[in-house]
Amino acid sequence: MTADTALDPQTIATAARLIADRQRLLVLTGAGISAESGIPTFRQAQTGLWARYAPEDLATPEAFAAHPERVWSWYQWRRTLIARGGINAGHRAIAGFEPRFEVTVATQNVDGLHAAAGSTRVAELHGSIWRERCSRCDTTLEVPVAEPADETPGYCAVCGAMSRPDVVWFGERLPAQAVETADAALARAEAVIVVGTSNRVYPAAALVDAAVASSAPVIEINPEATPVSGTVDCRLAATASTALPAIANALDGASAGRYDQ
Ligand code: APR
Figure 1 (cartoon, rainbow, N blue to C red):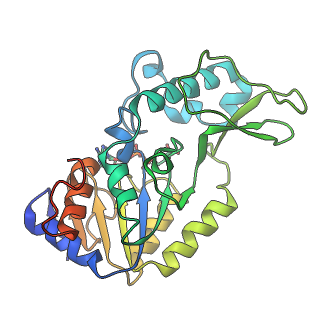
Figure 2: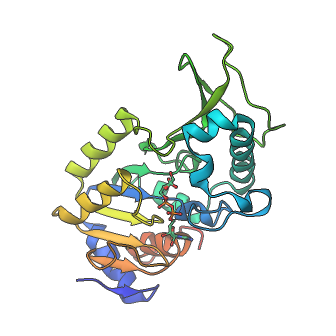
């Protein structure tokens, strides 16, 4: 059954009912959940200086090898957007599920906003923009969540080679630990919420396909349809920051206003 609608009370009630009596919840997120923090999604046209580039032209080992300063500037720009935007009601609602559910968040985002909102079990499938890795000896360094002072690349304190953002670029393998955490959570999940992803980029999208093929009910939250929209149990054609608090409030029955709307 697929309810294809936005925030009508009936669909919210259906979504809440699908998860209310479950214990283990897997939340699969993509760039859309951070869109309302002012962070452009990958399929949105980039703005300003970056308008002439597609992420696919910047988030690759080849781009970094050919134009390291340009790639670094792009990531510094994105760090600034994240530091300025911060968490939104969607991130907070997912973190707020934790007292009630055992929640695992498997995210394609590198912005760190789920952990910043209080989610305690987050698998970062595409790494973190707040971590740097030496391009030669793999030494890693956590960097503070702040607007970068400048755009110059960092250099490894151990071997002196240029650092790179510790994120997964196109064509690179996903971090084994994050994939293992996500796979284990999916195997145990009693319900799955898929929010803010176009479900087009593999292997992360394979998690969504597996969720839909599993016995666990799947709820999709996305203003636009995606390849799985016709196969999920409940679809909310709505934004993350409106649908997730509404589902949370429906779970709690009368306790309206527990989450920012
Ligand atoms: N709430 C929920 N969903 C939203 C919102 C919102 N406010 N705004 C946009 N969306 C949806 C869009 O409709 C789109 O389907 O979020 C999705 C974002 O899709 P993408 O830009 O493709 O981002 P994502 O699915 O995370 O991309 C996957 O591709 O470029 C690589 O590594 C990069 O992690 C990224 C991966």
